Image (cartoon, rainbow, N blue to C red; front, side):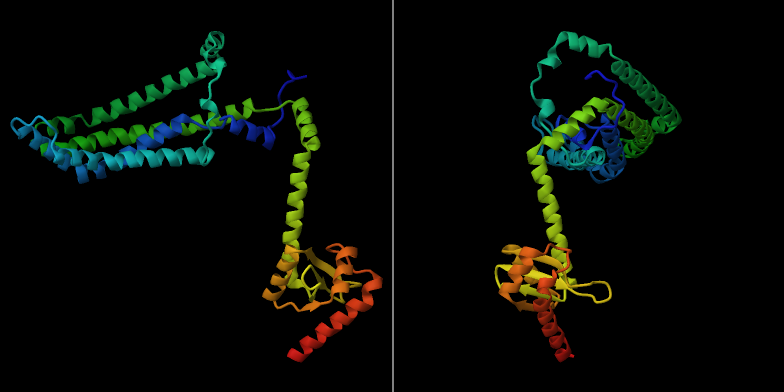
Length: 344
């Protein structure tokens, strides 16, 4: 049964387990292309801001007769030139990775695994279908990049040759412009190829984590039989119910309290209800939250310990009160209505 054909989409649990193991839909080409393109885009600004200063410092270093150590000016110029490039590379790689898999890190792939050094497994991986696909992609990528670079350089040959005849400071700008054109076109092409590779990697990842019907049934059995999971589900459902109850206090006509231990919020609409309905109830800290919400929305709070205990014990949230409590609740509502008329 375990070898049954995998035709079903992976469940969220299966995806989470794969993610913990470092198995995610990610393309290394996206990171490489994004970093390269980012460096190309920032290079002209870096050259104008720090390139000439670095060149001048380097020339000064050469002209200093007998200077065996790098001068402080040269080191500072080199640092000022490289710092924006390194920062751009780091940020671009971070953003490119986050766009693929989010802010994600796992040490699982770094843990020792004897299967990775198994020569038989290594030989199988070397001649697998995946390796053949990766080889074809690499050949296609480098072929296209080399062709685009050659075409661009061929078009910029005259500018580069003319720049070589100029003094060093003046030759820098046209040379950088020509190289910028090469880098920009190569970077754009690389990024397009990387996007295609990402689509392939995503398709391959989805295929690799598919499940068989037997695996789906086994996972469902495990989830149904897991007491911890059932407890978590119940806890989340209770928390959601509490949040809804507290949110509904604003719609209540009155909150009846113990006055400290219990709090029950009632609402009565003669047009839609046969009897007053409990919209929220709580004990302890939840009762305190209901009282705070009532004060926030100016809902009257009426202390009535016997009635509060009876309502809390006999009526669930969303239910109408029993007939045995009609008289007591009617007296409270009449008191609240008199208060409202008095305020007007």
